[in-house]
Length: 576
Image (tube, rainbow, N blue to C red):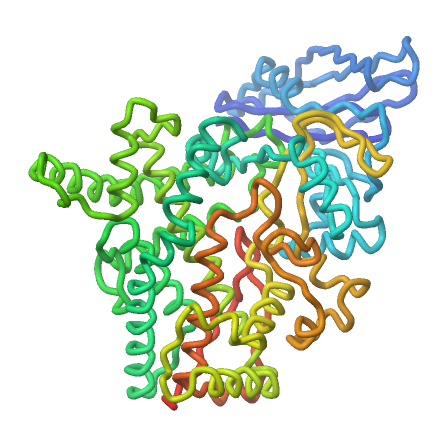
């Protein structure tokens, strides 16, 4: 167990580190000596036995003059019954925690960093909003030092196009959060571009999300939407409120489990194993989005100071145990039916096992890869869709005129049939506009999954250094008054007047990303969000509970990998 106190002097560009181990001897004081400054820090109480050593620490790349050689003098203390300090730990910490060298060329503008923490103090608990505010001061292409990590933030469609289209090859690699590091080794969203990544993505694009495969599972989606409507009808008959995000989240999980394994791993009754499965997915998504010191101070990643990687690893292990059970059952079934034609199930698991048995298995579909693939599908495929439906209904409840327009359109197109076909979405322009406006105001992933520069590159007159992390702030783009009149107002009509889509071509609206790393599950998400929202609107009238009517809907956001409502939308439904 190692504890460290780090003191920096930004004007001198050096780092002083005191460290203590489980040996009973903490640091008494640190003395900084150079040609211009002397500073003594943190004396310990009287009565300590003091002895000292000196560690020279030249930093030539920072020094203003060749003769300038700062050094750090550590004075150690052994208290009566105190602890012994370890000089070895101090030396290791000193070298491990040094700040990155200043780039020789010009980074984009940004706030002046504080010693050690850089600009971390500016992020707050709503980083997407904080970064959008900073972009108003420093511009749509800015840089920050977050801890020891150089971070570039993009906040306009024009700049996003430079990174995600014109120079896509340089920025196609992900900057992987430490909490999901082990999972990322076999994960399509996190793998670097290469033959294996391309093969895995091809499998998802052609065998799961291709139009012909989605059409094949049309009846299954209709079945799951019908189950959702029946469940909400029961809640309405009991006078119970509907937690919109929870019921749509469970519906999405159930659909995916039937698509992948041909059986339900979850259900709307929330009992037993079903509840455990839902909680695992929720906990994994929340943990992946938590601020982690290891991401801001990579030299500390091995220590995992906050324990997020250990926590996530435990959650992944529990989830993978469930997946392994499904795979084992299927393999036993295949062995039992060996030689019999037509006995293998036509689901994603059956397909993947057949591909894994081929000699030319470029994707490397071993057990670890299958687990990661299933995890990606369940996590990304359920959370984003459910949060989008919740935000859409929230905005409609606050805009009665928009709600009336959406319901009138559904009545005209669907009528008394009350069953919505996916093919009819194109006949519902106002519903499509509602979804687009929801994606603009509440993008599922406010800061797209981070990218990393694989080489230094000049963009718009600035140097983006090799290894720099790149964040695309799509939330800021959606609230840009130069693009959207009255940007904070929910106004679906704006999309009836402009031909803008969200499938990666129009950079004003890229909630699912763009370029080669656009979300592969976009085709399924589009169908599910439209059909689920339309079904909820045509089958029920919605009203807020009395206390919410008095106080208004709490619109506070809960930042994470996805942008959820901090307070779930719980509303009353009345069958129409």
